[in-house]
Image (cartoon, helix red, strand yellow):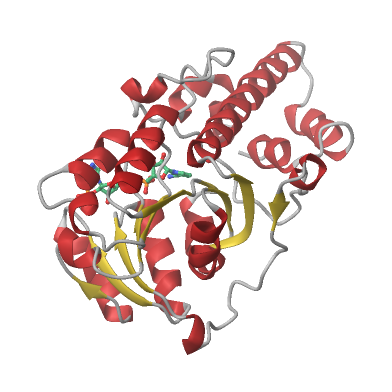
Length: 293
Ligand SMILES: NC(=O)c1ccc[n+]([C@@H]2O[C@H](COP(=O)([O-])OP(=O)(O)OC[C@H]3O[C@@H](n4cnc5c(N)ncnc54)[C@H](OP(=O)(O)O)[C@@H]3O)[C@@H](O)[C@H]2O)c1
């Protein structure tokens, strides 16, 4: 029953972060709270690609363990070796890419170096074809991108900054403008999936940016995720979709919690009720996975 506690107190599930990032430039959408990262499920590959219906594209699932030929190897920096970034960076190394890592707390680089990455300062992580940031929030990304000796000042012209953190639309727009002004390219590529999914290269990647930029980092996105959905030419669109997904996950947790509290008070067996719901009308991964917690 302890596992059902998340349902009864869904607010405890979210980490507080990204507060100021809640400002959106899409006035019809209120994403209050959506930048807090819910414990999103490790998707099992059963997600359907609806983007085709809207004329957008996605790539088919790929084998996470498929080796990357040397011809596809990318010289890439990876900044942010937290719960998500450590697994993502490891999969880039395993995928055959030439990876330089940086983390504010240097000790977190050691396991990556043991795998074959090089550990360096921010500047040295920005001298390749691309640099991926997987930092806590928009403030951290801006600090690393715009700071003295930051990404924008060092990344070569034409190279790509791939921003995978959950950040706000306004921050993503600022990054896009700054990179364009510096002759660099920018792709927003936030992800769905828990740290376990990051380790297993099972993330769902939402990519957006100019097609040539997205294409040039596709081998990297292939290495970290099970599937990439290309949402738009506008980078911030991917951030908006990610925030809307977080909002939906939060809504599911809240509504499922309410339903379970109601039937629980009526003396109904919670597991039997969940079984019924998640095997019939509510069989989506998000209900099944949160239902089991
Ligand atoms: N965890 C999830 O389930 C999940 C799922 C999907 C997406 N996300 C998103 O992925 C991103 C990373 O999440 P996480 O779970 O990996 O977080 P985390 O474990 O807390 O790691 C955060 C990373 O950001 C670095 N960092 C924080 N503030 C910094 C600053 N001011 N300057 C430089 N580096 C800074 C940390 O460095 P130190 O090691 O030095 O602290 C660490 O490398 C977030 O945007 C999150 O919303 C998370």
